[in-house]
Length: 104
Length: 104
DNA sequence: GCAATAGATAAGCAGATACTTATGTGATTC
DNA sequence: GAATCACATAAGTATCTGCTTATCTATTGC
Image (cartoon, rainbow over all chains, first blue to last red; front, side):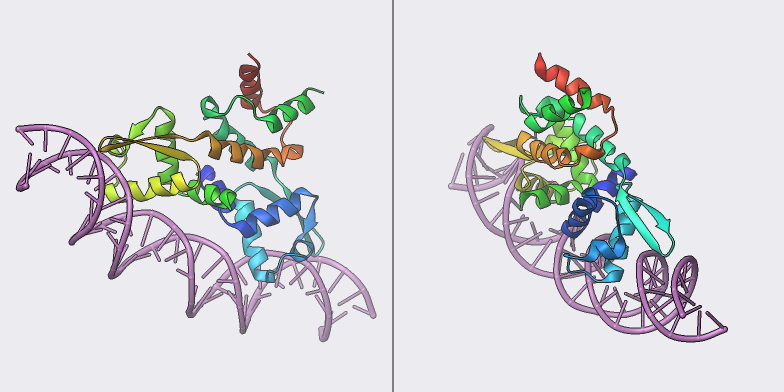
């Protein structure tokens, strides 16, 4: 089940940091390592897990591999979250702003 | 960091099942065990983790302890998700419906 | 072809996690 | 007040996770 992979992937703070960095723009694996203290194999392993969860996708460009956020994973989280909307507080401003953006 | 606790808590499929069951309505720990094959201590441990993550809250009622969904945890996930709204696909129907509900 | 570079994969290991059984704690019932 | 019930906590253990070092694969440039 992919839902399980998504939450497992995000359970690790290093992977969330990698994901956040990717959200700033597509980047190859070496560039991702800058600023995060992490070995090359560890980064490669984290990216494989994020990719398998559908949170990230890759595109090989010569001997570089560019990674970027995959909207599919985010959509699945949004769907999971939507199941519990009965419990959300009346105002979640961030989401209101989101919807306004979407309608423009 | 609570964000970390939330994602760690949701990384376990048994805990997500417990959370989902609680979303149907407040329930005590014994009632929660019905339908899920899990020992009493295991349930108690899972509930402690969900509670510590802010996903669930408890209210003691005599010798029973009623658990219910805590909106705080869900709000934090929504905020985390909102950070990446630039990557959401143009239409996430579930969330649109949510906002319409909220405006009424 | 050969060296260098970007990245993936393999194997091993220390620490974390989710379970188990056993026991403790607090409230209820008789 | 003794037994019972609902639940929490403790301690031990098998399994999982994330790291490490070592090695492999694929691409580039000479």
